[in-house]
Length: 260
Image (tube, rainbow, N blue to C red; front, side, top):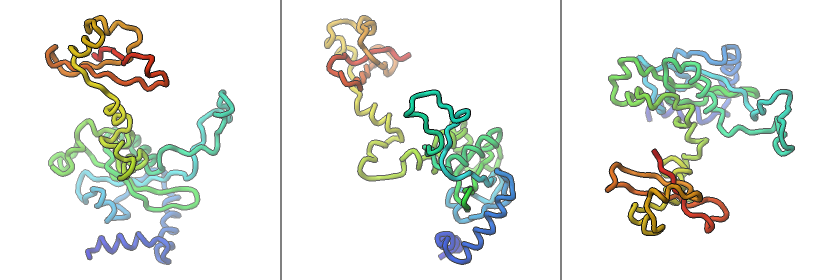
């Protein structure tokens, strides 16, 4: 086995005497530092490399601490101004995991220059959890010339952490599993999967024959929900009709509305 494999096994046994002492000392040190601090090197080298880190120019490591526990509702003096059902303030649980929240906070701090690649756990105590975030400089020549990582230089990868595109983000979105029920997540979107399976595509000629009128008149009918034109040119135009999700589906016509 290589050295990284031994390091991985050491971190897997966190309850050993050595690791318990080491983590207790490290968490004390982390508490004395700022909430977000720059690290000269990753604490867990084997974990960082598994997530894509390289010891070269353009890669940076930030350590951040996040307070453990639930998420208190952000309301003044506990006044929610609503129904009793929504009066809860203290026992609320966040939808996202603390690791994704840590990535978000670092991403907002370095948003002017860096992109978030991933993160990993480095310690925790009774009050905080500590994570190290791998950041990449998309404007550095060493990054832009590397074909294995220059994909992150594209503008579509700005704020990956805010859109649930990192590993921890995909975890709290429920995209990591496999097996029963996970076929509804093919493509990365439960709503997109539902939309694809509940969509009927018809040609304009078929639509006109069903309703015995032209497309122009169909679009003006009041009870139609949505209709999308796909393609350019009348010959290749396809109509996409969405089934109604309400309880009285049989009382409604499929929706029609032109998508510009």
